[in-house]
Every structure is written in structure tokens, then in C-alpha cells.
Length: 180
Image (cartoon, rainbow, N blue to C red; front, side, top):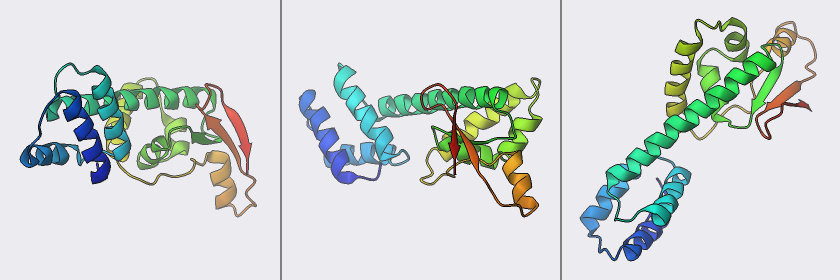
């Protein structure tokens, strides 16, 4: 978490809710434990704990929820990727609803490679690699806009004019074509 003002606002609300006084030292411990996560992630967890926690949460309670959510997000993202590999394939360019997926797949060699070479035997290992990378890449601020497929890459390599047709994945559960 980088937004100290929002942090103070949320930790104060949590303290008031639990009738707790927080020393500066203890506040610093909470702050340090949450620095590795994004503001959005921390705000969601604060709101969740404000609504559900019967006792004043310790830093470990925040971390357990945040780590659990990261693993959950990574698994959901993998399912989305797997469905796209099976339904769209490697020839089409794709744009996932979760842009973190773009960064992960790019690190894994790109959409073209992932979608064209994955076998059912490799699926389990690719999933593990994807989920570990997802947790790292989720903390990056910038992600590619989309992932080019084989058709677009071949046209680019041959110097042909690019007429992009991008399949949008996962926004409402159906794949949609986008033209650029």
C-alpha cells in the first residue's frame, strides 16, 4: 500500500469499530506489512475486515487474506486462459479482461507459443508456472494491451499491413471480436 492517507483513514475506522487505540509503533508495523500490496488490494481487505472481523485483526490476518486472494485470482485467470486456448487458439490475437494475464503470458513466451504448444501433459506444469508468475506480475502497474496471435505476428514478420482482429476474452463470459 502506498497511499498513507487512505491507510490512516482505514486503520482509524478499524480501530474505532473495535474500540482500540493504536500506537505509532503498531501502526508502523501494519503499514510495513501492507507495503508489498497494491492500494486497491489493501482497501478491499480493510473493507472486508471492517464488515466481517469480530476482533481487531493482526497483520497476519491481512496477509492471509491478501495471499489467499492472490492465489484465487491466479487460478481464475488460469481457467480463463485455458478456455481461450481451447476455444480461440493461437492464430487469433486476444485481449483478456484481466490485463495481468497479458504480462504473465508474455513472460511465458507469448500467446502464439503458449496456445500452440500446450499439451494436456504439460497443462499441470504450465498452470503452476502461470500461477506463480501471476502473483509476481499482479504487482506491476503496466501490462500489454493485448496479445498478438500467429496471424498478426506472421503478417508483421512479412511486412504486411496489419489489420488487427482481436478477440476479447472474459468480460461477460463470451468471446467478442474487436477490430483495430
